[in-house]
Image (cartoon, rainbow, N blue to C red; front, side, top):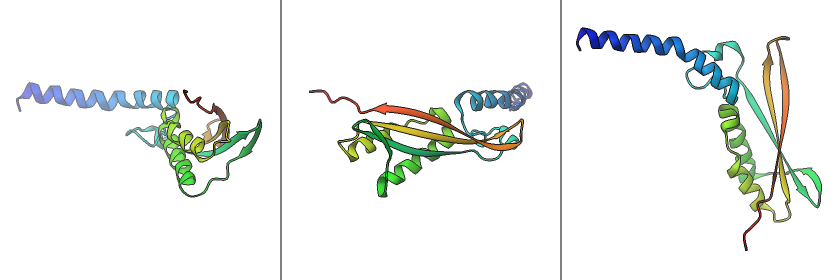
Length: 141
């Protein structure tokens, strides 16, 4: 490797190391990605994140918690892990399809996503709930 190529490679590595923390912080802030992922330094600023997922179902206009067992329970847990890691980039499509397939009387699904994070002002762990409602997809005749 010639001197100029080696120097250019070193400058590129230094620039990456200098710029990546700012890029990583922006991704964590905007997409809700776990700060412990994607080779970021934000992991040193807060404890590992976790998202808890509760699935509520609507039947005849009444909302009630889903009593999931077996495969459906594992899919909920897999989505919770995915949501913890990827934040809002995680897709609930597989989970929703499985819930709707499990019972034809389900009219809608509401995901309650509890995000537990460190509050920088109080230095306490704070839970924030986000509710997302999905109506049963209409089947085409």
